[in-house]
Amino acid sequence: MATITGNATHQAALLGVMASGNAGPLTMDQLDAVLPIGRKKIATAAGRLILRGFVERAETGVYALTLTGRKALAEGVSLKSGPHRGKRKHPVYRDTLTQRAWTAMRLQPRFSLGDIITLAANDQDGQPEKALQRFVHRLKSTGYLVELPARRRGSTRTSNGFKVFRLVRDTGEHALRWIDRQRSMKDWNTREIFPVRTGRARHDREVLPATRRGGA
Amino acid sequence: MKNAFVETANVARFQAALSALERRGASEACLMVVDGAPGLGKTTALHRWAAHNACIFVRAKKEWSPGWFLDEMLGQFRIAPAHSYKKKFEQALEAMLQRQSAMHLQRKTFAVVIDEADHVSRSANIIESIRDFSDTGDIVFVLVGMGKIRDNLTRFPQVASRIAQYVRFEPATAADVRAFFDRLCDVPVADDVAGFVHKIAGGLNREIMEAIAAIEAVGRRNKAKEGAPVTLAMLAGQPLMNDRRTGQPIFVPEGL
Image (cartoon, rainbow over all chains, first blue to last red; front, top):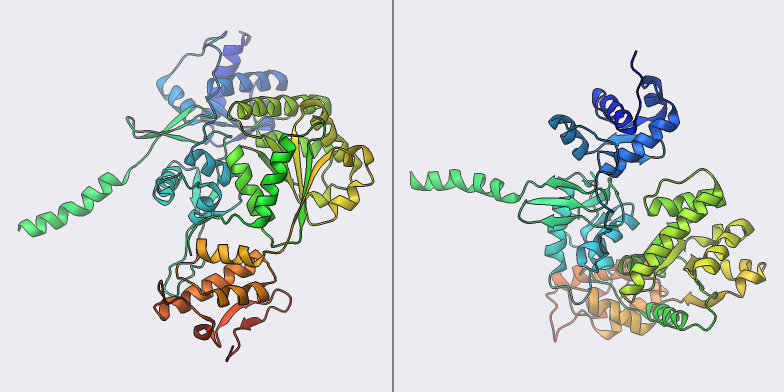
């Protein structure tokens, strides 16, 4: 019987187990029950997969596949042992409105857009409402933010109230950045890229039938 | 109501204390204590400052142990904590020093803000851990609480001597209330209304915000504009805010 040796083999085995489940987070106990290697080896392999960006640590001893990991599995990427990339360069911490807003979101358990504007906007920021509305929409469509069912009461009599959000995927200190060319958001903490469904297509769908009716 | 941050006298005092802290003589004296009654805007001011300076912001828990404290700090950096206290301390110190260096290049002060620090101000273990961090890495710690911190820290003279600045958040002044109306209120408001709100709100920010919402509604109904601001006469008989102690609404008296 062939023995499993080498870190890449362990990583492949771990990735295989994570893919065979329901793609949800797996605890160390669950992994230990399935894999024929020790817990320390599992932790080492998981650490290496985290460095590759294939797996993330949901909490201590709990691992989950990332989007990059799922893609790699689907494409059948072979995992080679040894250094797989150069020294990772840490992204620069930028003093931008979105970075400040992201930090403010991490500070508050639940928040409205107004709360974030109050905490993050400077007098130098041109139109913070518009910029942060876009940022919040993109974070929501990539699954980082969820909208809570209860709204915050507005100050005017006919107000519908304000949407309240919660940050459910706090991956680290660096804010997600918009890549316009790819219509995607990049998470600099996990190096993952998430395509964002923009409002353009929906707008087209809404306009098209009206134009047809007008034409007929 | 507009979404904006109001620079009150308390915030100005806090900023001045920070500037003084940066110019301190003894490098190890890098602790700061911010205290004051609830509702004076301490947490909002500190949240804003932390968001602008990429600071670490943790909320102390009643049963915090040194290990739990380090776990929360490492959680803020998204670092998986090691098992031993020694390794956790090293992990936290390294992460903080890296962040401090990055923020120093941007001419910003990196600090660790501990909110609700009253919970830990009597715990020698945690206070000594904080002292270790500040001594080893000259890391600024801001302890935020409700007034017991100063007294409790006198039990630890070696820590109390390292507190470079004390900032007490006081009730909002008349000028602060005027600034709240100017910066947040959608309708123009006369000085007599600002004076009345200052008097009945007791300088508490939450109550002032409540009053602004009520005054805006009246202002819109009466089509208040520049040159014809909301006056006390317009507000006569209207509920302005709820009394924090009794929960009863406070009305503007008729005939003021």
